[in-house]
Image: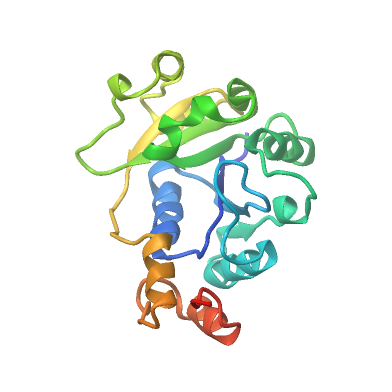
Length: 217
């Protein structure tokens, strides 16, 4: 079986160093062959992003260029439908085959809400789930909804090496370096005409400035 492939979805509104560090550390902690970034086109769980889907896609492309282990998937942006994770996983399964190990990367907060996702139980038939958390603050079943806690206990893999032994179905956790950066913070800085440099790659910031994104109207 080939190396596991990480899948990292999100609105990336805008993409920043916290996102990049999560993907980089996931490769190291989970022995992934790479990470495929999947910007959401029409995210169903939040309000419309501040900029267009194609602008967010372009920012992710600029942020990830130069890292041979990163690739960008435009499938959700190009689809004229809400960006449900289970649909994306079904598309990737059809593309990559039944034997490729797929690892969905999510943060601890997003994982806690997994049971509200569309057809969430089907996700485990299509991919593993890797949950990043703060160092010293592991994922606790007591903080999860009962049905999700049951899945967590039944599917948890104690060795990330097990990800390469099957294509889907497991849950792993890993601690990642915490960077106190958020897209909300960046948008607020930009809206107020303040500097967001060193919070996101220069190429992304240049694109934002070129197209006057996130400015107050």
